[in-house]
Every structure is written in C-alpha cells, then in structure tokens.
Image 1 (cartoon, rainbow, N blue to C red):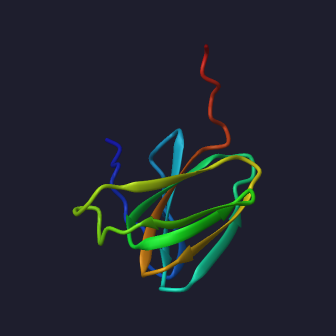
Image 2: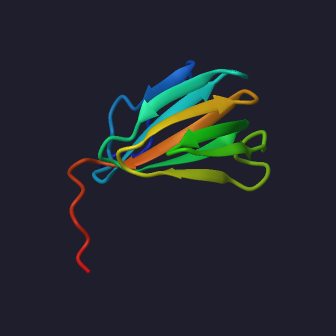
Length: 114
C-alpha cells in the first residue's frame, strides 16, 4: 500500500520531499524569515504557490503581487495563492515569517485529451 504522507523539511529556504508517492505532482515547502527572499525560475513547469501562513510579495514577469497572504496558519483564515507560469523568473520576499507550498506538475505529465 502506498503511503501518501511524508515529512517535508522546515529549515529556511526550499525543502523538497524525501520521496514522492504522487505520479503527476511534485511538492516542496518554502520557509522564509521576515525580510528573506527566494529567487527561482519555473523552467518548463507551472508552479502554484499556496501560503500556509505569513505574508509575502511575489515578483514575476514584470508584475508585483504585494502583501499576499496574512493568515497565521492553514487553520485560520482563507488561503492565498499565486500562479507562476512556465519559463519565468520570480522572487518571493517575506514580510513576516512565511511558509509556502510549491506545487508543480512533473515533467512527464501526460497531455490531457480535449
């Protein structure tokens, strides 16, 4: 039986899964201290950033999304998310200690028939 529960690191910066039981999605956890920034590139994969807690600014493609988030943790308040398209460089800057989930499809994602 496949276990879909696994631990994800909680150190500052990006924390990937030790093993990934999912076939179509990849997950990582981004932890940023107040004022800390993380820069990256989406490459050929779309990314959905979901704030677990905290507040941040996301800069991508010449656009700035300031003050995203605001809840203390996933159990209080509504979630906030930012979509990052393929082949884009981005910067995430925390305005408070922030924890984000980064969800992206795996590179061998099968095409969806239309």
